[in-house]
Length: 443
Image 1: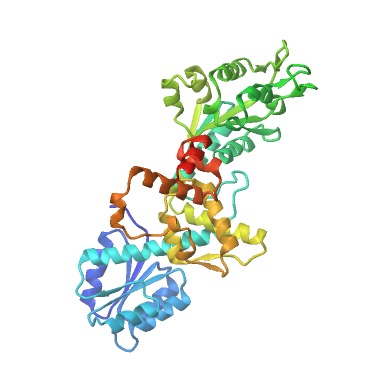
Image 2: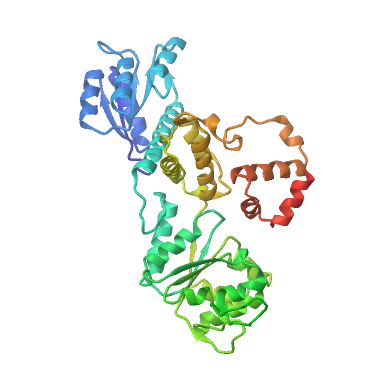
């Protein structure tokens, strides 16, 4: 049984109830403190950091309602729930009104207790994670914000990769921050004072890519009115980041392999080769090994590039990092627009946490920027979020829709999530812009 570490204070004037709750909660790994009344509970709260208070409703001298109010007004980082043997609708309403997270009527089962406790603590953790986004400074070396195990694993790989000259292949979905990881490797390496040159291989037409990468001499082709160095020469002594490496042709892959093997480039139109001292970091959002099996990517280049492989996790796999990033982006855009900082309601935080984020961190950043622009007040509620991020009750018609209808709905949702950016939407959907345009015309 794992130790949950959360500390719970149970307050009840019945010794047998205190003992049962203490034993049951301890069996689940919680640290449990007990108090036979409100006065004792206040002394505990003054001396201990408590995550959750579970209090009886009716007790001698001072009631549980007064304790609920005291906790809510004095301990913003503590949740509180109430139990009672005198259940009534009025009592439940009053308890919730004063700030109790839940209201359990005796007798209740162990599972009802555990479920209520987990719900209250989940809400507390969500609120803490959101506040962390506003308080925690970004590590400027990485430029990446997060506390999850998944992103800390990436940090570990960055540290190891930075200390070696080996080539690195960064994998991950679009919008996960692969370029940030590449920059982190460069700026933690001995090459940090030299250039970091990012190149999006997928955005450069195939006919121009060789000239852009390796440069060209005057007269090499129509329009080459002067000799111009390429990205590899620009990055000499530093790092070149080849994003979307899977989009290069087999012919270009041969040329890149030669650079890796011989550490030299040949400008278009020239017969001489030139030495370059460049570290290569590549990235892809595709399954490159699958491309190798299909004959779309050279296996020798793949193995040369993937000496060290770093897989960047999806945002949905990073837990409360979503909330940390959401608050960070909200504060950032509020400063840029000279607006009041935004806060997120518990409902909005839950919706952000539960959404799948197909566009990852880039989608989250776009969504928060839109909220800062469009929200009139300083609190974002769940209703302010785009409809696809909010909970929706199941509709019977959902199982009667054709595949084409489902596809159209999904395309519209992805477009909305990236503010109508068709290039980004096509990347997320795994299709090219032409196919996306054709599908939109069918609508």
